[in-house]
Length: 86
Image (cartoon, rainbow, N blue to C red; front, side, top):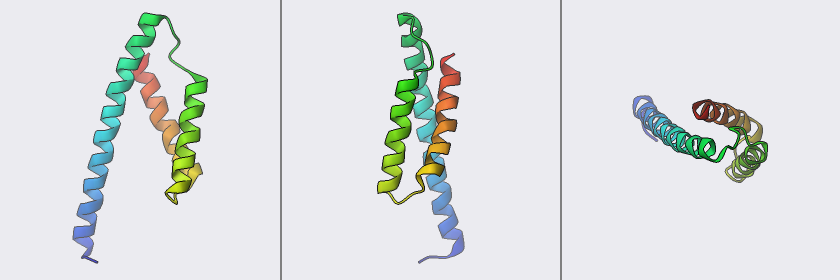
């Protein structure tokens, strides 16, 4: 099983990867924002956001995670990504 310290190091490594993935998502969203501006499209796309939330709820259920909590997390991520597009 491992000792507490080594397990915490593994959790820290996973947290670091999550943050790197969020940074990558933000970078992609900035590019999307630039394209939206060029095309005269609004930052917020309610239909796309609904698709994202639906997809993550479904994935959460398949992965045995609480879909409500996962959706809340994604609301924050989507809000952050929307703010970099403005």
